[in-house]
Image 1 (spheres, rainbow over the protein chains, first blue to last red):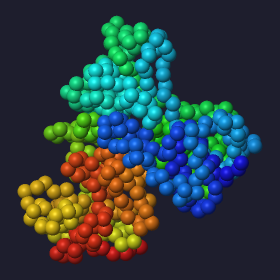
Image 2 (spheres, rainbow over the protein chains, first blue to last red):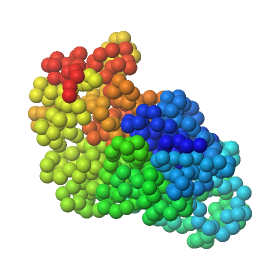
Image 3 (cartoon, rainbow over the protein chains, first blue to last red):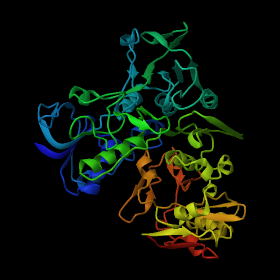
Image 4 (cartoon, chains in turn yellow, orange):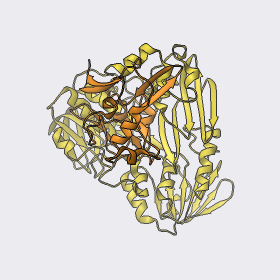
Length: 411
Length: 144
């Protein structure tokens, strides 16, 4: 079988790709191959599902009709085993293969599980990345369960919030001396830690597991934690195997150019499996965030259909809440720090070479997008009234003429 | 498509647009009942500084970054060009607030996202901010 466009991986990058292709090519055949048994759903919502804030139906990223409407043949629960870039085929787990003209590899991330001693003795253990992970965890917990989560990053803490109120106790540990070490500094992390603790979540920081003995974790400090259910949320790694095995260039993730083309001809990649050029740190990083996946996927799709699109302004950013406390972060935390503390809100703005390069806001994140946009556009701060909007972001900071363009025209 | 445009030179800063917006989206028939003594959550907001005033609401961007960034698939832009929010899908992560360059996505009483839908999804049928603006500083029209 041959399909003009083949997409491996059913995450959000695949939807971006389909929508990108259809902007240019209204009818070329698209085949979507996904190892999961579900149509594209919103992965970051799995904790909200456990919390009862969404449902399986509402979690679908696009309506079910989307695929038929866009002429997409969907192969669910189908694993892609190998890409042959010479013959331009993808070998599938059922032994068949499918030919492509243009291929997108959007295989996402896989959980990173350190080789903890005795991990095989733990009976009830889970990752927290996919819908199936969440559903399996849900089946394992009871109102008495003592849950131990290894990893106080976004995944581990969202998991804790998701099961909060449905289990007996939750303990989270992390080798870092703070929570959310990838997006917060220790100062801002403190506020989040207090909120988590005030909701009864036990935090063990600066310490991690040395070994497991069935339902006991012995920590490096010598302390021990007894648990009934273990969640491993140490981190994720880009799932690069297919492109690597086909001879494609890999760095921290799959290496792509501004058009999302890999080093293999007609093979594109998008989403968490790739590395992006972060304009705020001028370095290649894996930006495993949903907006990045969509935008890379869309860019790839347009180029696969022989339109032209370039995605070269990736900015790391996260917006997330825990028990009603909001966190908005973007960019990189270097340069001159402008710190504003108001009642219930901590804001840190980082200015480097006359431009805003990053921020951390804990509390009121109203209009944070005005800051994010200054970062993305590399707006010279001497062109705006930056002083005026340190406290409260507003288009007031811009000149009347700039504002006229923004509010008086089509943007 | 027709969009809401503001002309700050004519804006009086009276905030009637905010009240009319909140009323139009309240589902109530009586303005007093809808607004009196209540905190309002208008989808258009007036800014004021140093004698300058202007209102901001969703620009219904041609290439909306909020739609691409929404982690819940709750924001969409269909053929009519309007950027629409499915509030039943929104989980209140506020990624849209983090990316909107205009600060035009606000929060509702639950802390979830809220945005202008040009009064086409409520019973007003025509932007209430425009209809109620005493100085025609807000208009609803087609522009290039």
